[in-house]
Image (cartoon, rainbow, N blue to C red; front, side):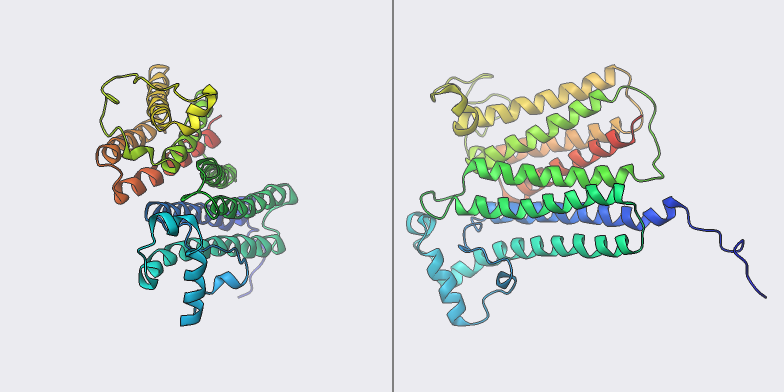
Length: 338
């Protein structure tokens, strides 16, 4: 029995884009994994253990005792070792080295996981050049993220005993932008189910607040601000503590004053809660809002527990990962809204 073209109708654009959508969501998951491992390197003090940037040869860990000694000797020259970790021997160093190496190795995996399927899909003509251009832009953003990572690490190799909070914030914010961009493009591919019609600006404002909060959280992490003022809801015994403006010029308090940085982080959390409440009162009660509200309540609860517990690693990692999930959920809602 012979078959005809009618027996196998041509694939629709949506069918051809389905692997692309799965790939983009997988890339977003890899970025989230990178963020979690990056959080581990920060919380375990591992981020400065590799003092050189070797994009090609760095894919291999030390393979001999001499290699390990060379890596350890490089670490022994930086302020973090001299001031804080001079007690370390080689075996202690290996414990922090591996987390940073895994983090950098994952970065290379993310690059390959993006580039190879992109070229395959382009060859298969699964998407047009109109889609290929923004996808290439995402690849460049991912590469820039790698550069930001080394730029951040380099800030702790000469004078500081940790990385600059400014560069940490740039690194984490770039990761958040890459993550939401991947979710946005994947969600916008056809077919996409639209939510009920209504204004999109409240969703966009909510996403902006979440992204600003992620950046603010990076400053909290960079200054170890979560290790101070471990009470809630009052902070240093007051709703608005004294000393928020002790640095001059005043703008420095937003980024360098531990008290102010933590206060700003708390305040943005309250603003996000108010925005979700406003959206509920405004009638945006169906569809995505209940899920967003649940994620937000979990995130707030984790944030409070992390603060009260003086930043235990498990809770801190969950708090950071859930922030990205919340940003991704709001992005998906915005992409589907009409």
